[in-house]
Amino acid sequence: MEAKKEIRKYYIERRNRLSEEEVREKSALLSDRICSLEQYKKASVILAYMSFGNEVSTGTFITRCIKDGKTVALPKVEKAEGKGCRLSLYAIKDPVEDVVTGFKGIREPDPSRTKLMDPREIDLAVIPGVAFDAAGIRLGYGAGCYDRLLPMLRQDCVKIGAAFEIQLADVLPAEKHDFRLDAVVTERRTIVFPGRGINL
Image 1 (tube, rainbow, N blue to C red):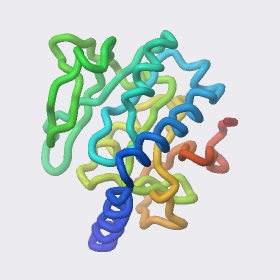
Image 2 (image 1 turned 180 degrees about the vertical axis):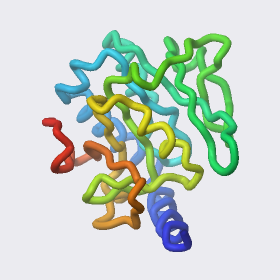
Image 3 (image 1 turned 45 degrees about the horizontal axis):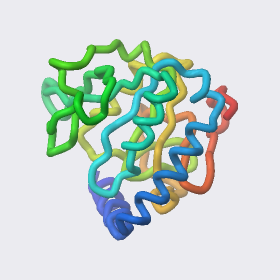
């Protein structure tokens, strides 16, 4: 756990050194990469997230998904039993009007304006993280939200980590239960992990 904490701190500090302009430019390139994938073109329902801080910015990506006729689902943090959190998914139609400030100041879907979705409806999931490695392991923020959500998605749902190149690691500490993603997309490239059964 201490090792994960130190690694998390290292990659967050690295990402925080990016300027607003760098985040905007790199995020735009990354968004274009995702939208050029065949899996994106085929997907009807896309899970995205509302970015905060120096995460890969998703505002223009979400708007583009909606313009392309996709149903966009966003996560809302719910209290979970014991340690950690649970995510509920809601379909939005407007990334400004349909969201409110929620958990830790992150924008979340407003349940009074949006439709609750079953995770099994998702065709393509774009997942945030602090760091990702060459085996598809994702290091999150430590609350376990996505660790609980990812196994609930369909097996054929394509799960993509969204990250800047500086968030990539050779190897991250992993446990048997850690969920492996299908691919990671950065501003420079798309990395597909072997044995995941998809072609990007």
